[in-house]
Length: 273
Image 1: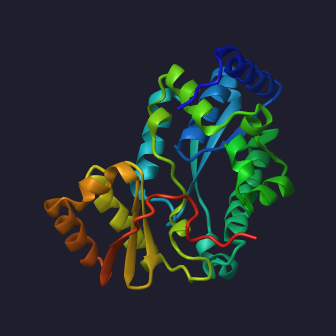
Image 2: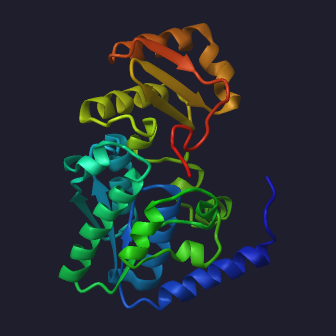
């Protein structure tokens, strides 16, 4: 892995700090992932009680992720509020077309906007980072509509840079696997239900308990398609591990359990323009 010169990374970090120092107060969309955790750490260090974190809790977020995010915030002394979002009550979200992510983020930002107004918070921020510009991210549209700023993008910070800066702050999320909401495990156009979501969450918990780091359990009707990092393929194909994974995932209601030989890839079931 190539690493940018320290001066370049330091300049980006300084730009981020200048941006955030200019906020009178901020509410950060926090998930406990690599990017939002780093952004939360910087906001808290610079603004203290003028930095509030908002964690959106819904069936699309695994219970383990919520627990880890809350534990990290409590450990660091961050001011965290957990809110319930209602995207699962909206047909435009459940039908899972190419704009699902937009409706999800619009729901989140609407709730955050109400939170900010109640608590006289001036700025809404989220953890989109520079690498996201290379992908199709309809959530960005929702951010623009609700005037949610993306300081990591403004500072030009990409994922590996954020990981490095997180290590310098001794954040446990520095090496955390990339994560997206569980709705991203369904092919575009495949209707989402809480029951199916529960199957996916349970299947991924099986993979987590087996010690895999970066993975997805994609829902294709009665097929569970597993994506894991290529370096972990041999581990999964070990007879004992394979038999355990297959047996436990079949017990969730899947008829077939398959391994994608292309390995883990973000957005492999998403339709893109």
